[in-house]
Image (cartoon, rainbow, N blue to C red; front, side, top):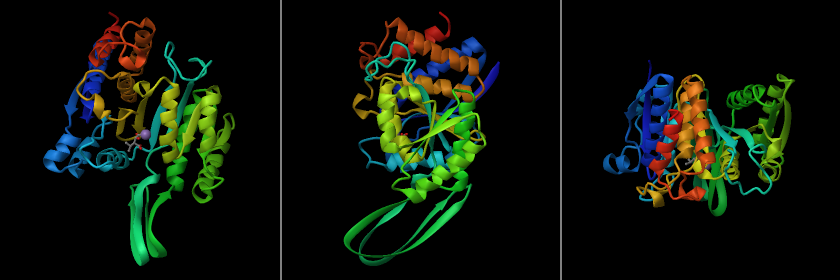
Length: 375
Ligand code: IPM
Ligand code: MN
């Protein structure tokens, strides 16, 4: 029997409830496909931060980097100022493990209601490859009051580092600014990943940018996209500005196969993607470093108002669990989990409130686990 060790960070809000169901389903898949997962629990999140003042320590990150896949619930809590946990835990981990791909399948399963009239599961089946370590997410910026001031801003990565020494002089009462940066190395690798992915799909890659306005940063992105495209003559391509792609996602989702996007636009368009695939309760994601440590999570947040009610839909997390075991090499088991989710939906007997049912989070986990085991 193959043994895996997988760290699990249930996190905040509904995180622990959905992660319990995700683990249950992976354990069921292990029973059927002959592997065993030892779950190693980590407490990082709001309670741990309030008790100890620690977000996620260097020691913990180092320890976690010994594993190839981490299972993550959700991070965020209304008791703590917005952004503290998200940046201090989630983004810190994405950057530390250099998880440069955020892979978000936008797939409408059969039998799931979509707000897009006349579109079916045949029309909505693409993947967003979101760059996950750069752009306006690098976390450098500041505020300056009227007059002269200086700032030294720095981004340090394993791949490269960059320093900005700013001499600021403004007659505005106060300014706020944020630096977005993309690097040649960072851009090239994520676009290459997208093209490689499309080679095994419909061989079409769409690029997202805003090169018409933010031309320094996204003109550069477009140039790198074209350079990679040249090496894949069998793959067709197109470009959309980010505003336009939101329109095409709604109007013609069937056009898309692989969509590659800088970080911030990827954040925005994947919430829209989640909606057209039936809602946030159904949208999984993976933060991937193909040669290092990856982290799998639902793309929704911690939904504090539903915490502890055993009410929310665990499917996004269960699906993220399928992506996790696929990363570990258990492709057959991963497919069995996605098929079990599909069967649960088509059966239509056990469903949570967001899908028009009355069942609990654990009812869903039990039903999908049962289907996975072939019972
Ligand atoms: C996501 C989330 C995160 C992001 C937040 C919580 C930092 O919205 O995973 O999409 O912006 O990447
Ligand atoms: Mn988001």
